[in-house]
Image 1 (cartoon, rainbow, N blue to C red):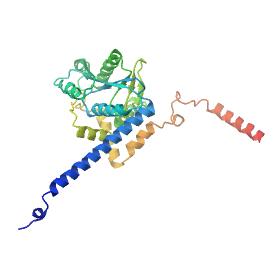
Image 2 (image 1 turned 45 degrees about the horizontal axis):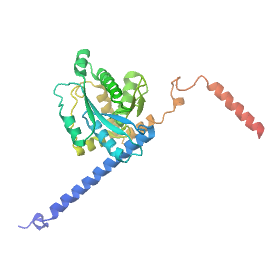
Image 3 (image 1 turned 60 degrees about the vertical axis):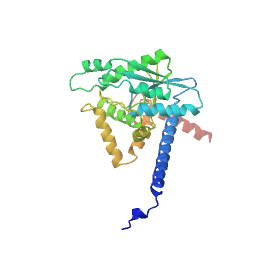
Image 4 (image 1 turned 30 degrees about the horizontal axis):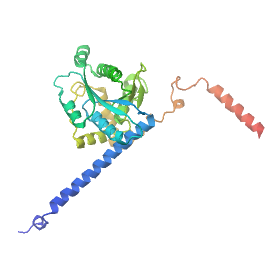
Length: 296
């Protein structure tokens, strides 16, 4: 009995496969261009990279830092300024950490890199009470190690792989649990004034980064220290934001715009706005109006 399959030309399946591959390539190119554009815009908007900068790219082995390194390498080829990149991984001596993965990957790229070995894992486990999350102490130790190493190698900028959702999650974590209205700035001078931290992925969506990472087949190294902790406040906030975005598409984009569009006079921080001086400002404006009226 004749079937539709029997009647199909023999070359139909390869042609269909070729069309699928072509479509996948187009979608990948669009995604890569979008990430490059967003990273480029963030760099320009905040003056992240200057002529002659040596940028230390902090590489954890996760999707975000892999993507950051790849996009920065792409931009480096056609950038209007000359800058160098050096990848740095902090090996925190977590049990089972595959030490060979990052060196092998970076060797294939031909990227200059350092593996910084610091047993912060034991310190975190020793100092953190049972049932408490390790994030705060771990991040402080990691930050201190990386900041100090940046000085050793003469890095002028430290690049971290935080993306748009990371910034928004931090905003709500500080609001809910810290009583402050602050997030992660795209560019930051460290408290001691010695290091400038940049976040080139600040404009990038996590979903785009995850898809790019999947398509690039980066050798992902999972973080077994913090990612699997129960009652993680950041994870709760992440789920909250994801639910908002699912119910109201575009909400996260508007929220991020709000972070870049602050009106100090419409908040209540007396350090940012001179509320006590409003009467004097009012009097000056009234006097200016009277003077203008008399001139007319």
